[in-house]
Every structure is written in structure tokens, then in C-alpha cells.
Length: 174
Image (cartoon, rainbow, N blue to C red; front, side, top):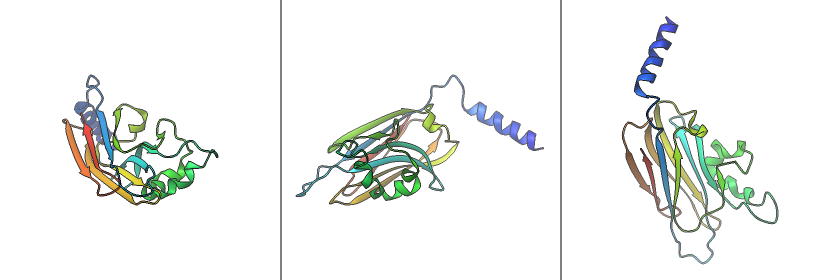
């Protein structure tokens, strides 16, 4: 009985995703607002995908101070990205290949991925959230979440806006 159930489940999965279909394309746009403050530091930013239980299934980016006098100087402040740090960051060896990057200036920054990348291997059919968290020295902390379903059935774009540390954050899945 269990084998029949698995066989039926596999046939449904195979029929909905054809090997000839191109992998989904994911585009994340993060706007870092220009702030008029006396002491401005670029924010640390983490971008990840979590499941409905808030478990991280894919780290997409973490931007922090990579260069400095000491090798680990920039990682000292990564715990300020509190949600990301608790859920994923503290268990990673930094820098993370393909994920870590330098802090970014004010403006719009775009990340592009294809769904067949290794980082999406743990994503099964279901509901997920794109999460973007930003924290800034002598500033605040903010998090924006965008829900989506995987795999995509049609092209969709969703946008959420932060109030202080993040501007518009958009997710496009094709």
C-alpha cells in the first residue's frame, strides 16, 4: 500500500514538471534607501528563503564588511541580523561561497538565480517566504517578508516596502 502511494505521488510530481521545461528564474530586488543621518554606515543585509515553519531552506545573500584589518572583523556584527543569525547564520562558516558579499551603497541591487541551482534543492512543492533583513550600525534593524508558492505556475512579481532601513523589496519568479 505504501509503495502504491509513493508511486502515485511520484507520477503527480513528474506530470506537473516536465524535464523539457526551463528551470524557474528568480529575481530579487532590494532597495537600500539613502538616509540623511549624521553618522551613516552601510547596512548588513541577509536574504534567504524560509518554509512555513520558518526553517531556512536557501540562503541567497549576506552582505557585510568582508575586508578589514582583522580577518573576522566584519563577522563580529553579523549577529545584529538577529533573525537570520538565529535561523542560519551562526551555523555557517564565513565567508559563504556564492552567498557572502560586501555591503552595498544606497540604491537598488538585483540578485538573479535559476531554480536548478544547488541552493534550491531542498525546496519541495509548497509555500515559502522570501525574507530580507537589514541592520545598520548606529541605525535600526528591519525585516521584510514576501510569501510565494513553489514551483511557480506563472510569472509573478510581488513587492513589499520597508519603513527605514529597507526600501522596496521585490520578488519576481518566472
